[in-house]
Image (cartoon, rainbow, N blue to C red):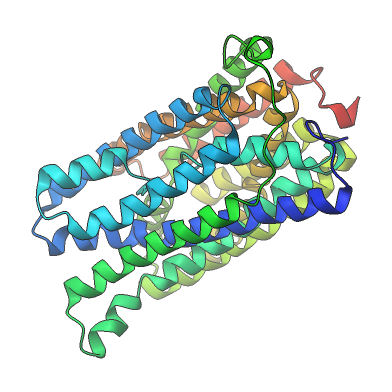
Length: 408
């Protein structure tokens, strides 16, 4: 039974589709904006160091906004906050077109919605997770998050392809700078479309001030903090094998060509995306935690073996198997977090479990780079796999008895 206001099943499905559509529009915009942002900043005269600082400031701002909105949502209507976040998305796109000084760019990066990473830290995420959990029945929650993740991943991939649009606009007579600015205007337009969709989402149940919880995290605080700590270990481990470092490793060890690497990462992304609905199917049979753990461990073993085998074809095959398994915890993790906390705690729980992940993931690539520079090229992959296996076993041990409602 869905929590909150009772709605007919067809209406719940319809409103969940609104969240999917808004997520797809947003991720499409993020897909091209993340690629074009450094290009645009270079075009207005910023150097590599300044662009790096902008990226860091944007990541920090996204993290703080995500935490803040998660705790604010306990006292405000989530539909209203989603529409307001869309307004911030509109303002971000338009502000970048008018930002010509370094100080102004830093300000827009800090308070805006464009995140240069592909992580899940976004002002929209905790609100969408909470609303989606309210709009679907417990039995359908994981399947809903699988659709949510699948559509977001595919939209982001098409958004990355759309990042080539400025080249086309230049061929029809537009200046390169104007073409880049046009893409940020498109980002703002997507914010308008997303805001209109969010406005269709049903408002949450009305509560009187005395009925509202005193804190964003209450009875589930200990569970959320334990999950956040474990998820941070997983994210820290993942930072040793981010896509750019994997590409560097393939170039260095096997001399893989750029075109071959591009094709490999395309198919890796496709396999990861299609694994989301498989994860939802599997979780109905073995449970959410078991799905997270028993798909993750084989993927980590594949990564370790890929780092050690001397043959390119075997290594790529192992990495593709890993791609098909390693992201199956994405919808199941989101569903589990929403299931084991009370409905008022959901936005804060989504924030607290996602922000530390991104911060932890930012620390390990520098260590991996140092290992590469020292000649220990396989070590980052081996460390990543070993840490992830440790995380999986710790998660299984700590949460084996904490079941979501549909598994009780």
